[in-house]
Image: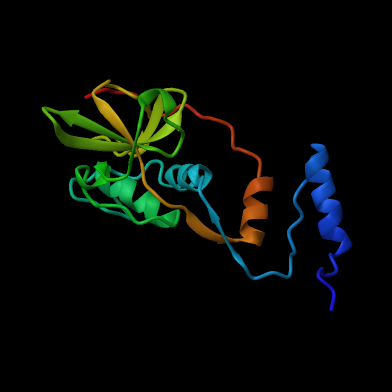
Length: 183
C-alpha cells in the first residue's frame, strides 16, 4: 500500500505559482451554481439609491413612491439584498466605523442629544443620498452637519457568480451634482 496519493498537476502548478510570489487572475467555473457572498455591497447600494432620485419626501414613507429618511435607507438596503431596521435608531445597529474610514454605501446616523433623528447613505466625496425633508426630493446632497456616526451593517449579499462577474465589469456612472440645503 502506498503512503501518498496522486496530486493533480493543476494543484501542483497552482502551489508553485503561489510559492514563487507570482499572481494569476482567478478563473471561475461558469457551470458552477455555487453562491458567492460579497462583503462589499457598496456598488449595489449606491445603484439602488440613485434609482430613487427625485422621489418625494413623506414623513413615515417607506417606498416605493415616497420616503422619509430611514424608510429610504431601509428600502435601498432591502433592494440591494440586506435587511436593516426601519427607524434611524434601529439603523444604529451594525459595525461602528470611524468617520475617517467611511465608504460609499455606509449609513450615516445623525444624533441630537444622543438620539438618532436622521439617517442617510454615504455617497462619497462628502456627500450623501437622502430623503431630507418635506419639499426636498430624494437626492444626493452635501453632508450638512458633523453630528453623525457611521454604521456598516454586518454581512454581505448573496449573488451568483454570473451576477458578480457582471457587476465587476460594469463601468461606474459619472457623478452628478444634486440638491442643496442643510436643515
